[in-house]
Image 1 (tube, rainbow, N blue to C red):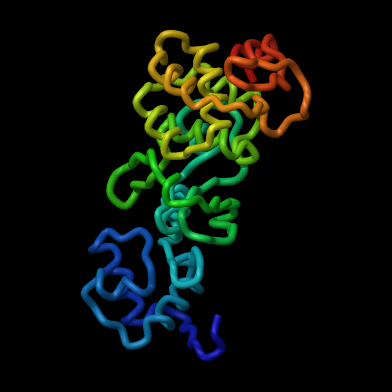
Image 2 (image 1 turned 60 degrees about the vertical axis):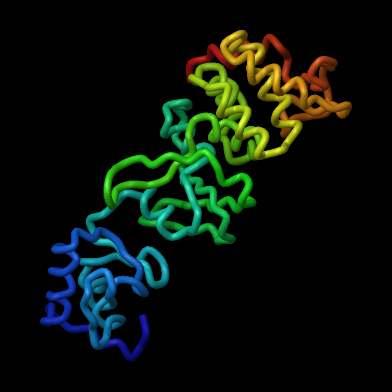
Length: 266
């Protein structure tokens, strides 16, 4: 807090008016730069008003220039609000879609903006910066000011196989892929956009193992992308295991273990 900011003991007329306008416009969170236009009202010393309301615990500061009502606790909304072109993704999206029972202690946000990790209301937020071509496959969840972007199931799984360190446990990821209700068109569209041959091969192989003819179109597409270089089925594992020539994959996780991962209850 700036030393020059005066903190009043009680709510003054400007502070009270500001809170009433937030209520009238049903604003739960806001950016300081845009709030006067949203409220259609100019304030002589907006910074002082906001600092006072934070001090009185009527507002909380999410980051510099961004505030929320003190009783507002939707972390997914706030995390995506403070990052451009962003969506809840990776392990957080896996859990939201019911694809893993393991609850992440960190909220993972995919964004095209370079942004440092932070903390919101005591929750750790990890921003993962991606190129624009990977910023696909998002849906909106919630309504009004409680709406936030999140990657759909297909995009979530592709993201997780691309960046397994943000996906939790590899066994959980295999189970998620094996049990998810997936569509051919989305898998083809998203893997084309990603242009990551190793990920496409892994997903094609796993689709063949767990989804058979139901994902036949994607499997056939993935086979056209197979190159001469062998990739590990678990990108974070050791260089070991049998080779699967059809997919140019090295099984550093045993085939029977993959089947067991898909059936495990955690």
